[in-house]
Length: 471
Ligand code: 4AD
Ligand code: MG
Image (tube, rainbow, N blue to C red; front, side):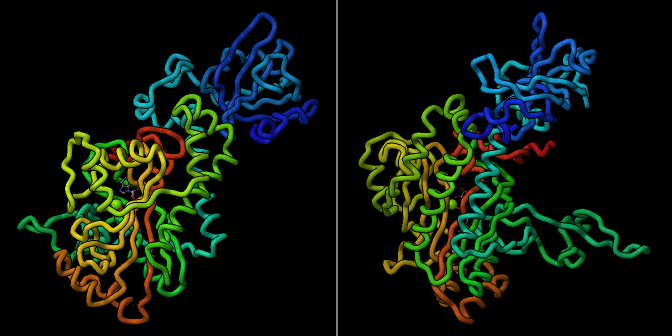
């Protein structure tokens, strides 16, 4: 359907041509002499309006042509009389492939709330909103690869199971699989603690605690230290017990790592990347973007156009604190140099202080940032940057990395992290260390930002959040 209706002429060039459509029935309206069946095949937002008459082969199955049923429709493309679409399909033959009981099909014609649709996540891609989110998400992923590939970055697969905690925040999901020495030898038993209640790691599959990765960065740095610019793009996991509209337990992250680069190069890359993917969907997902603009967040197209065109504001963390204090606004969380910015502060900065422009904040106090960030000459701050956007808050977190061995060891000690387990990461500073920098972008937050969808649970097909891993 996208091939027919997606062109500039909305299908006019197809008039008179034969066409077969396979898809799912959205609605079926019977009038006296003709029946209109709206069929959607997922390739685009538009349905194909299929016009049936009593002469249509398969017309005797009309009682089975219900919302949700799958059908195959053969016909000829014709100009449509109705104002809603340029073309429709005059149907010669219709076959119902899979019936759908209209009394129990959970997604009826009336607009269902997104809360309700989360409870039927297996069927929600059949709705306009979730079809559009899936297509835009796909386009953002494609544009991500295109941007980095065209800029000479190499895509690196970082491991999902790891023994290192990149962010040092202790938010990992453990992967414990004990090997039992049964007579059959080496069968796997999940998570059996020893008699005193502790896991005996010598019996474990990995012989040490292993977790699902919170970030591919440390592994990415090893490849950047050999291949120069690289990026990772894969799933990451965090056991943050926060029920917010911006956190998932399983989310996808894009993590470029630039060799021979500093924080300014990093910020320039982040800005160029974000502008590229925003432009890409505005140009390539027009129909879906108009849908979001009409039904999900009014004005989003104009706002994204602005993001694509204008330079982003940059300011230091210290200036951001001054701005927040100077605003005299009552925030729920305290504002003070040394404390992390909360989402209400981030949103105030982008939405109110800078009227909806993305803002990059740099040079955060070292105490509130991860151990690997490069210490600035003031001894108090690190070369970190967060890119904030309206509604979503922090979209990107990045930094220049500490490439000096002695500083890095000092930071590991200060952070109470075990140096021994980072031996390979420290080796990068022993053998051919280079200044390098990178960032991580939460892909679902990008989908939220680009579509106007307000809850991150609707930006991924099957959200994983505290208390729920259904589907
Ligand atoms: O700021 P974070 O924790 O940074 C890192 O993980 C670095 N290792 C990245 C790097 O420099 N290579 O996370 C990066 C981004 C955040 O800005 C946010 O967009 C997203 O990941 N993110 C989440 N998205 C959804 N659910 C969560 N629980 C998220 N936690 C972080
Ligand atoms: Mg962060």
